[in-house]
Image (cartoon, rainbow, N blue to C red; front, side, top):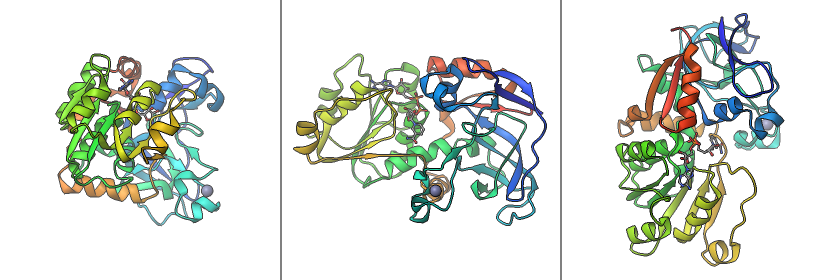
Length: 344
Ligand code: NAD
Ligand code: ZN
């Protein structure tokens, strides 16, 4: 089968071939119908510092996907042949304290599909059956594939009160754009999007942002305060990982507000803890992955409600063999989600 491999410890990736994997007793074999490019894949493609410390080439990249189950291991009961599945990409131990107390998304033994083991930029992938999320039939495989990053946005936005609250989504990459849509669909009173890339500013607007601010052209602190009667926003969904953006967000969050951090800064970020956190009485929380499987049920419910239209977020669809074009698009930022098709 055709695969996109990180063959060597250097930037880029290559098209290669591999044997179709054989599912183990507790695994399923999935024919990949769509696999989307994640920001993490771009880090691995670029071979940044984090990738160098984590990734062990040669291996198959990719983790966001959907596809049809074509074979099941002998112990599998949850999933059957013919099911259209997506997957929770964190493979956990189910035995540690975190797994056993409803916090499996924080499992210390977590292995990530397409990061620590062979991934989904492939015609077929074998995954543990317990990670499969069975979807209704007849839905665009691209939508099913992006449920995973959509889950990141859902966990962030719904990590506290949102109904009737104002929210600033800081950084409108694919996950930030999803967050704009999720906040709208979940009853936020006002959604303010902050983004530096023009293409993505437009996407944020398309997905329903009430105000879109480019912090490179206007002072984001004054703009957000102006838009909120000088009081600041109730909620920050931080999805840029940009240190300046993070520091500024603490200036325009309301007293007693919530700051949910999903974006990953490259290094340490110095903050004015006394003035911006303690005396403001705000709550800062880290958001990792998706809750297993609470977030997946929330994603399903939001999609079924009809109030969440994710169509505009999927901006490019390419045959998998053109993956380099996909990574160029991701690099430029002039895209939402880029979806690859391994069988085209
Ligand atoms: P992305 O890199 O595509 O999006 C980040 C966006 O922030 C870009 O569009 C960029 O233009 C924008 N940005 C940069 N500086 C800015 C600034 N000063 N103000 C406003 N916007 C700014 O990434 P993504 O795939 O959408 O993911 C969002 C973030 O979440 C990334 O940092 C990613 O690494 C992280 N992430 C975290 C988890 C987790 O489990 N915590 C999971 C997935 C992704
Ligand atoms: Zn565990």
